[in-house]
Image 1 (tube, rainbow, N blue to C red):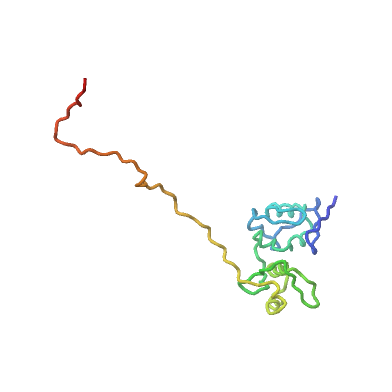
Image 2: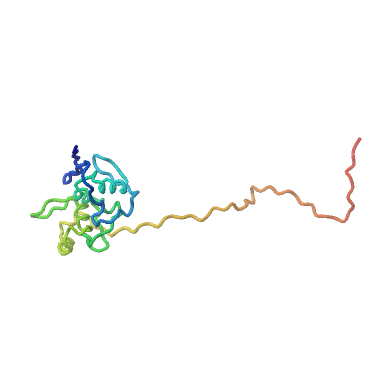
Length: 185
């Protein structure tokens, strides 16, 4: 039995029990972040590791349309394979859903165009040419944001609070002999 689901306007994925398939990453390497969630329209969010297992077992086919879903390769932290940035070195697409239009070529979402560059499906010479096009402005290229370092706080120690501490008076020792307290009858 073969079930077709529309994942985007340009991608149809067949979910079936097919022969063993491919890897989720175009490079053929395992995903870098198997716990990252990627949401497939009509299916919902799934961990990248589970998507990879479905692809490898042949349950998610055909491979290429799935691999080319917008932001899949970056979300799952797939290794880059001889690609380039369509925005130029050190930059990334800021508007992945914006549509890039160039005369004589099919219109394509900026995110998908970016993935094609990173994956190496856009030849390097064409990738370098894209950077110079005013039509690319719609993609809102921006500097790649640095990955913030994890926030760590110093260890919590319990120091004495001088205002809340109860102190018993200390009587200094004397040379006087000790006597019993008088008892009143």
